[in-house]
Image (cartoon, rainbow, N blue to C red; front, side, top):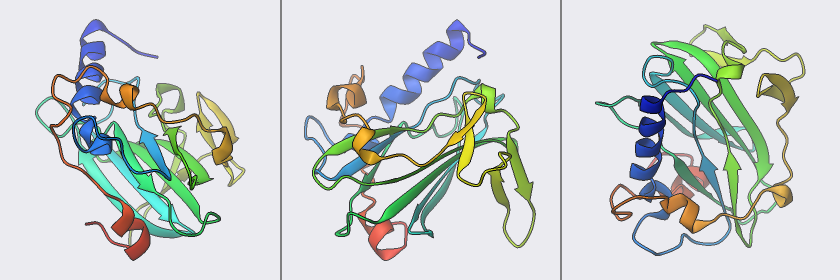
Length: 204
C-alpha cells in the first residue's frame, strides 16, 4: 500500500464531498431495500488511477456503466452509490469497479450479490494497489476487462483470488453517519436514483 500525508488528505476530501450521491439531501435517510456501494482506493489519484469505471449488471444485463475522470481538478471518485431493490428478491446484481491509469485498465473489483428487501446494506468495492495489473483486457467492438483469476467466480481481493459471490445477509447495515463523514455541507452534490437504471435499463 502506498500512502502519504497528501494522499490521505485527498482521500478524505473525495469521500466527504461526494457523500450526497447516496444520502441525496441533509439528514434524510435513503429508502429501505438498498445496497450502498462504498468505493475507495489506497492509490494515488491521478498518478495511479486517472479514471474509475463503475458497471452494474442485473441478472447479467448491464444497467449502469459510467466512467469518471478523477483528480484534484477533475471529478472525484463517487464514494457512495445506491442500488435500490427490485420487486424480485432473487434478482442478482453484479458490481464491477475498474481503475484505469491513462486509458489502461489496472484493477478490477467485483461483487455478485442480491439486494436486501427490508434494509440498507453496505458493500465495499475497493480499488487496491495489491490487485494492480491483475486483469485481462480483450479488445473487440468494445473493450472487455476481466479478472486474471482462473476461476470465473473469483477476482483479486487484497492480492489474492477470492470468490466474488456474497450473501447479502452477511453485509453490514448501512450507517448514515459513516456516509456523511465530516462533510461541512452534506446537502451538496447530486442525488443519483438508480431505480430507472435497474428497472428500465438506462441511466437517468
